[in-house]
Amino acid sequence: MQVTETAADGLKREYTITVPAGDLEQEITRRLGEIGRQVRLPGFRPGKVPMQILRTRFGPSVRGEVLQSTLQASSAEAISERKLRPALPPKVDIVSADEGADLEYKMAIELLPEIPEPSFAELDIERLVVEVPEEEVDGAIERIAEQQRKSEVVERPAENGDILIVDLEGRIGEQEIPGAGGKDRQIVLGAGSSIPGFEDQLVGASAGEQRRVRVTFPADYAVADLAGKDADFEVDVKEVRRRSPIAIDDELGQAVGLENLAELRQELRQRLQRDYDAASRLRLKRSLLDKLAEGHDFPVPPGMVDLEFDNIWRQYQAQGEPPPAVAGAEATPAVGEVGAEATPAVGEVGAEATPAITDGDAVPTAAGPGQNDEAARAEYRRLAERRVRLGLLLAEVGRKNNITVTPDEVNQAITREARRHAGYERHVLDFYRQNPGAIDTLRAPIFEDKVIDFIVELAKIGERKITPRELLAMPDPAGEVALPS
Image (cartoon, rainbow, N blue to C red; front, side):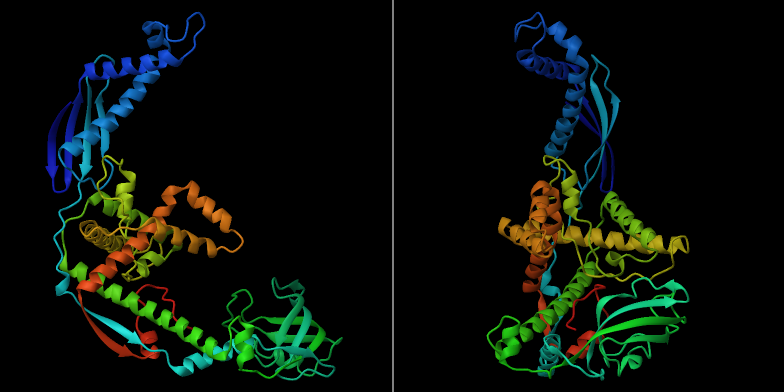
């Protein structure tokens, strides 16, 4: 095999590779020999079929298989011998592959860049610390108590605070309002309806009574087709139920599967603390990634940027606005998608997928598709390049520091995913068992978190205590920050 480098431009390399015709013929003959030992043809004993007949019957298909395997093996060998680290699978263009002639082809490849060793000790980052106020725990307990509140049927006209069990039907003129009717619907009088005056007209109703309720939907009603329109509701009152007083005691804790009220308070406090800690960590992570982005400007493979940009642009065109991964979560191209597409012998991007970065790089909403697309394209390409650069940087940190995702961690992630789909756990488990590639979508964020934690341990972290209100007032760094309600 002869390999000649024909072009070198930045991270791009091009080679011409020639495989002698004799090597191809030798492999074709070997493969035909294997077939001859297995195939059964009329008039010949197994293993006694003449080579000429084998060439006539199987030669073209075997030659195609040998050419394909030779392309893969020779390109992988060329990459390995030169210690190249491809960012994406090489592009191959056959120049000559005539029967009896040498196989000659061109191979174009993009390489992973040399990534400078970051100095994490220079990173100065702030961690926000939030302590859960007792009044917030009180509020959470009151909401649970409201949900657990019991009721009993009463034989009297309905009062504010009562629950009505009704069948109802809503119409605008002669047309029924979709989704506005139903059987055995519950209406809590005094809870506040989205349609002004609706509940007020049911105060004083008794079981067995039918009432017509006339209302006007607000001009800013969420359903545009109903906004500002007059409607009639036929309400058939089936029961009037009086709600028992709210009881906040040990029985409330027992009602939700705990020992007592104190254990319920502790559980709620821990849950709220986890939510605030997660929101704080998200901002810490965004700050960390911003610092890394500011301090590193190495070249990135154009093909990777193109792939990431195409992904962003497809979402933008489909949604008519910056997709969540753009306006909020900065999901990096899984550089493991870099290595995942390359053959194992070729891709040295590593077993770990590049972290799907979720730092949140807000992009201005320029306009819908077709409007000011040039500005949007320029901004999204900048974002795509940032994602790729950060993904490569974190992947390299993980590689050099032997950060890996263990099988146990992957199994735990699969189990959590299965629990999210109650009733379909077996289907989820079967899906991941039958689609190993899908596991990368679970492995990537685990790897990302482990790399981020590693860097945080080495960086200079200052802490600042803030209130929940101050945390909630901060700009959301990732579009959808799960904060306590």
